[in-house]
Image 1 (cartoon, rainbow, N blue to C red):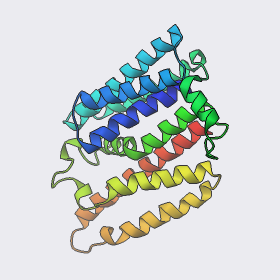
Image 2: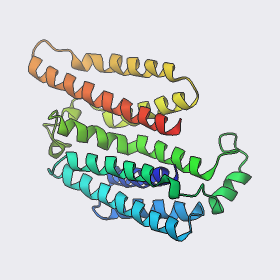
Image 3: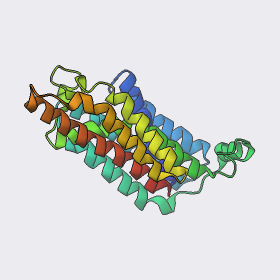
Image 4: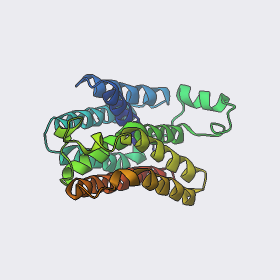
Length: 243
């Protein structure tokens, strides 16, 4: 779990920085540094663990670079393959990661907040990574899948041809709904997440109704459905990792 948590933290930080102000090379460098720093704070200082941290940093940089290229008009499938391969590698290498400790472990032992009491460092890293992914990486994955399926091109992002310009608020609603789904799932109330899904559909319904321009509405509906299902799958995948 440790490598997966650190990988998710690195990717999450990278995408958060990109969403605020894209700086190619800087975003992924900061994300990689955050993953390495947290790993060291968790006591991953053995030679094999340090080597693992270097690999995680490289994977974070590869993710960030591939996303930048995709958003500039490059192949949208490449970053999806990079992320999938990175996660598989992290899972395969999990037996060589310690459970963690170090300064992070001591801080968790001294923590008195109920959610942190008894939380192990590797579990804490996984939870942190899962939360960070919901904030911005989920939006990136949605846009990449939309591009791969031919629903919208990443190069149209923030242009007049971008359906998101008509379905405004998606970049804010997406992270909010994913966090709610993740929170409900961790609280054992996953069935209550159906309320979130139903509420989103009701909010979007007026935007998807029109008798004058059916071609445009069909495109918006496809965009809405594909984007929503990918967004929900990101939250559910995080729950599977935390199960």
